[in-house]
Length: 252
Image 1 (cartoon, rainbow, N blue to C red):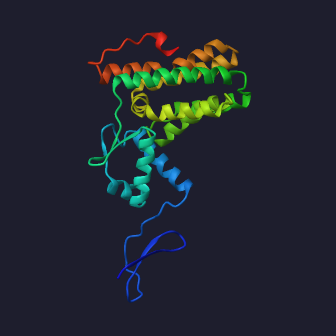
Image 2: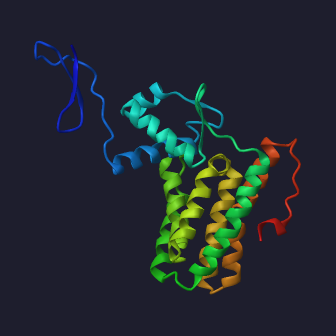
Image 3: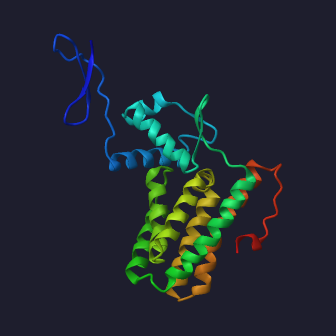
């Protein structure tokens, strides 16, 4: 008989009738919210930086080995990512990275544009000089960052989170964050294509300049539309057969 027990650190051990532990590969059990959130975030970042691409199957055994966690933790994480819309789960086919069609991408970015415009409007009068200094520091780091990895993504996220947090509306922040997560394929495109990265950095400079010159309307306009060119170029490149009218009124 083999009995499964866990030690104080949450690791599985197998105890035989003779009372000796069998030498088995240690499996880390994710048994608290912090570790689970870290695992979810790591897989989200892996999708965002292109390690896992749209329509790619997420094999549980591979994920277990990569992240050194048990099958239960992987299954729970994939369920959460499915609930968030980032992963597609099928009872017979397993889990795959979700691929959005052109219409879904356009609708998602229309909503992002609207909500980020509201966030910019609410944040403008609340952003402090300390916030602007922090954004300027992050911008310099982004300009000197050559890799496309989690570090790049985090710098970009923190830059925009300063604005979202300054809006003072937690629910607005949460909804924007969810939409940003769903737009992973377009964001990866924006990070990896040189023209898109240059445009992003220029828009960051413009945001800072608008605040320093107290140009509220200009600031709101950039917050509303800064992500639209990357979305349009992405659809034209990858979905040329899906013709969509990118009228500006769609994002207001």
